Image (cartoon, rainbow, N blue to C red; front, side, top):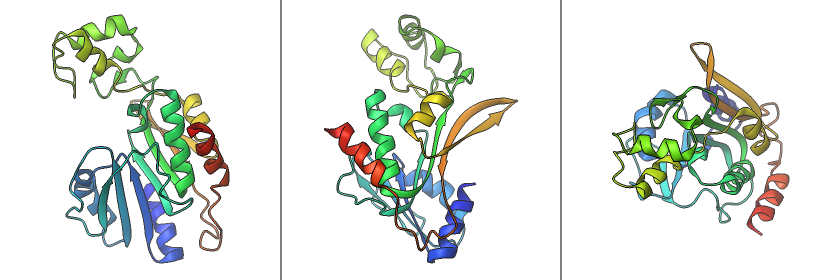
Length: 223
């Protein structure tokens, strides 16, 4: 589906400009080749320092907070892309700011996040752990390495692991992206992750970016 969005913009405008919120050069070094010779420009926005350019042409990075991108004008990009990032940005208000920026700065969105109701937590790589109360979950992080998280040496570091990712369900995700279609990615018959897709291919080259509502939302959240 993502490739279809890219191809629509290339067909209409000759190039597709993508902003990857929370993305890394490493990700596109691995997966960027899937785009083949498609003319794209990709900007990775990440709070962590990383190489400015990668091995795939047209990809660069900046160090910035995707919750606050006021230096980027409304509708500057064709597609706002994000892969398993929104669940890491903080509390609900931080997720609102992230979503508002994604909707504001791009004409289309392709945002992915793990589904809360899938029984396997993808970061800790444990079943059911994200459904447990924090006072139980943090103890699991102190017993052994859990997925991406090293074994916690104390309660503080264990709680950092617990609160590193706050998974969303479909209703929450739809609230964050009210103008997007929410689709599910399924595994063994269950929805393992959610996609928020906003795209209106016909006449994209002629239409002005419809980012006014998202811009007003960003200003409300940052007030």
